[in-house]
Length: 547
View 1 (cartoon, rainbow, N blue to C red):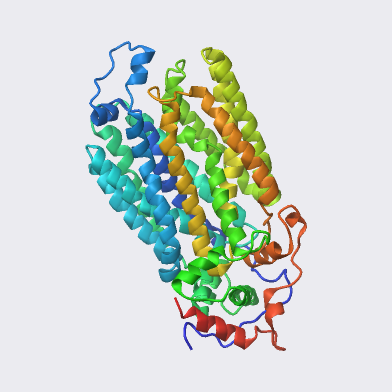
View 2 (cartoon, helix red, strand yellow):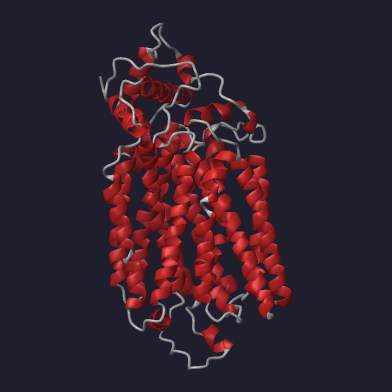
C-alpha cells in the first residue's frame, strides 16, 4: 500500500476527546518555531535605522555631511532620495512576495520543516551579499534574495505552528510569532542605535551581519523537531503522522489521544477530498478559488478572507513607524534624537504583544480585531489633527508621540498577532499550504506597495505630508474596523478540523456561538470496534501518494 500504511486507527464520536492534554514539552516544541519571527522582524527593522545613518547616506548618495550646526533645511536635505529610499526598503518585500507563493508548493513536496530550513539557507546567502555591499546594486540584490528566504519562513512557520499546536493554545503559540517579530524589531533598533555614529562601513554592516545568527539558530533548532502530522496525512504517510503526533503531544503512539486526533485529521481530509477532488497540479491551484462568494465555507471565500486579512494588517499603517519612523521623527523638527524615539516605539511594540497571549484565547480573535481597529483609528486621527493644527509646538509633538505609542499598543495586542492566527486556521488541509502562502504573499505585496509609495508621501522633495499622512492611515483603519465586524469568524478553542465544520454551519457574526456537536470520524464512518472505517484510511493513503 502506498505511503505509510496503518492497519487501523482508533476513532471517537466524542468532540471533547479528539486531542491530548497539553504538556510543557508539547508547548515548547510548538513555540520554538515562533523564533522565526525574530529574523523576520530584525530584517524588516534594521533598515529603518540604517537609512538614517550619516555614513550610509553619504556612501549611497555622495552628499556632503552637514556642518556642525545645520539648519532644519540642511538636515532634511541630507537624506536618501525618494526613489533610492523606496527601492532599498521595498525590494525585500518583493522577494518575500514570490518566496511566500513558492513556499506553499515546496512545503507540500518536501515538508514544512525542510522548507523552513531551506528558507534559512536562502536567507543566509542574501545576508552575506548585503554585508559585502559597498553600493546600491549588491545591497539591493542581497535584500531581494534574503526576501525569498523570509517569504519561505514567514509563510511556513505560521502553517507549521497552526498544524502542530494544541487547539487550546494555538492562538497564544502563533501570537508568539508576532512577539518574536517585535523582539527582532527591538534588537534591530538597539543595534542601529549603537552603530549610528560610526563613520565607517561597520555602521551598516554590523546590523546586517547579525541577522545570520537568527537564521542559523532557527534552521539548526527546527531540524530536531518533528514535521507536521497533517503534512504526513496529506501525503498519505499515516504511520509517520502518528509518530509525529505522538512526539508533539508527549503521548505513546497507541494512546487513545493520539489515535483519536489522527482519526479526526484523516476523516476531515477525506471529507475535503470528496468536496473538492484532487486533479492535476494546476487544478489543485484552482481549488483555492472554487466555490461561491455567498458561501462562507467555500475555498474562494477563505482565500479572499486570508489574503484580505493580511492586506488589512498592512493597511493599519504600523510599518510606517517601523520603516520610516526615524525619518518622520526627524521631520517633526523638535526632536533631538529621533533614533531614541524609534527605539521607544519599538519597545512599546514588544511590551504590548504578550498581552495577546491571554486575550486571544480568553476573548477570541474576532473581538480583538474589531476593538483593536477602533483604538488604532482614534489614535491615528488624533495624531493627524494635532500635527496639522499645531505641529510646531514641542508640547503638541510630545502628545503626538504619546498617541503614536498608544496606537502601537493597540496594534501589537490585536491586529499584529490576530491576523497571523486567523490565516493559519481558516483553510482546509488540501489547500492549507497554498492558502497560507497566498495570504502571506498578500501581506508582503501590500508591504511592498506601502514602502514604495510612502517616501513619495513624506519626503521633502515630494508630497511632504508630515503628520497629515496619519489621515490616510486613520481612514484605512476605519475600513479595517468594518471589515473585522462583517467578515472575520471566531475560531477560538476549535481544532482546525472543527473550524472547517464551523465555517460550513455559521456566518462570521454568528460564529462565536457555534459549538462542536460531532466528529468527522463519526460522520464518515466508524466500525463496531470503534475504529475509523478502513476504506477511509486506505483512500487517504492511496490519494496521498500522488504529489
